Amino acid sequence: MSAEKYAKLLEALGLGILWAFTHAQVDALLKFFEGKGTLPPEIVARIDFLAEVVNHLAGSYNNSNHGIYLWFVRPRVQLWNMSPAQIFSGNWKPEDEEPQKVLALAKAISGPMNAT
Image 1 (cartoon, rainbow, N blue to C red):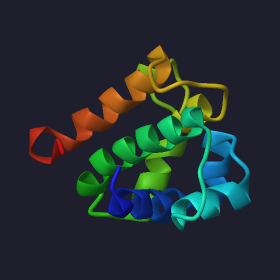
Image 2 (image 1 turned 180 degrees about the vertical axis):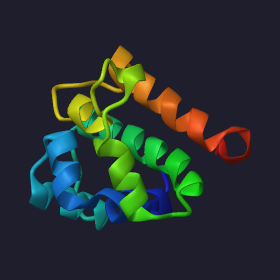
Image 3 (image 1 turned 90 degrees about the horizontal axis):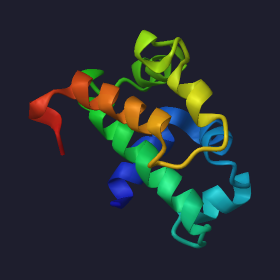
Image 4 (image 1 turned 180 degrees about the horizontal axis):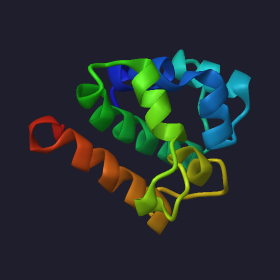
């Protein structure tokens, strides 16, 4: 994952939300984003997955961090009336059904023009 996408993820969600979604220690997250530390592979997989979701949302929300944040906290019928934040606050893996459904929603919003 590129440093630019990590920067966008951190900018869009903030360290507190990333901590809640990844269950990593805040100081470890900071060191990781600064390129001065490592994290367990399962945490890196979560970060990469969240960065992909944010990347799909960024174009649709004109890089509005507030709009992206709101997307994560709003309940969705397609997610069994849960919000993406509720799904990511538990113990999850990127390959699980619920996170994959969140990613599909983000991709649907971005459409084929932003599928990078």
